Image (cartoon, rainbow, N blue to C red):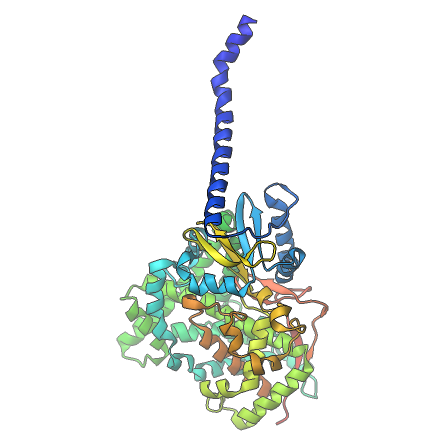
Length: 543
């Protein structure tokens, strides 16, 4: 007995250490929760509903989200979570961390505008993006973001946004790809003028990348031309593949939040090296042109950016990659979703084409393109703008976004049984907001909220944004800096395509639900191949 007691006495300090640590951890957690409850009570805040989970640490919620992503239904999965709780703001506890999810316009307004200084991107998200984008405006926060925003603003002047002549060259190459993808396809084309089947969601990102690199770098990736020549060794093709893979990896890493570092680091590094090499070559070409005294009009954007970066070409590269990452896919996604909707709505297609021909003339009467279709005339074509707005409402390019509380703060709505009370948001808490759900709320948009009805914008335009019912490009100080560029390019390409093609026939295999190809942005997907969506035939106009 004495021996056993002595041995216990000798080993008990080691046994007590984990017990003490566990007790202290639990005590700290209890004190933290009591402190939060006290602060919330002092501010008259109430709790938002907690989404139930079945497995420890909410692992089932993570697995369900990953499965929804794999099945290309992430936006609808999130909408179902809101519907199950019958609320537009709730809490979710995953991996020991509690976050908020909201689709309440009052909360979105607070996060993006009225309480802008209370929220930031957060260290994990910012660090993940900096792996590729460095000091880019889209990876920066706080003072660094304000400085970058001020530097970039003049680059998106109306003059730069209105350079549609550059875009027209790439539109013509797009038409060649649609109509003569190869000799066999051209030979098989219908004598009635129908093209062979083509995936617009595959071609349009190439168009926007080609035009964006020419605008920002003075040197296009020319991926559409490479397709026509079946040239797989073209430098622009390598850039395109690296760019697509980079966006996929960044998208997965962003959804892993603080654990982003666990996925795809080595492959992402390879992509970054390819992207850097192409941009560095464009910067060197700009230098060579200036030294030779050649006309450098094509390098206007790059020249101005280099001046504003005080000759720091590494920062120039980072800012350009940020612009490409944010701008190229935003525009391509909007174009793809617009055609996704038009293919499924013959009525809207016919009405929009009639409006386009009335406003801009036929393709044969305006073969120059840029002369007939201008920044101003695009804005004046009301039904065109309604179609673009309705597409953005139904199919947000970025259906979810998030911010992290920089200090203890509140959100104005979502607490209590009726959801009308403010909620307390402790410092460090992530708040996710869904424009996909916000834009489809029937209490805000009517019983036809899930339907594609551009005519709703005859009355809604302006009022919806003012009430924060519509925020496709975010809002507040951090509103998308390239919004007008994206809308202008999408409108221009849509007009030129409607002039060129008089009919469209959808060939996608499943129209029973929407399919979402979700990386950093959300584009149309497909049950057969997510990279071959919006499969259709187009009929070349006879006029």
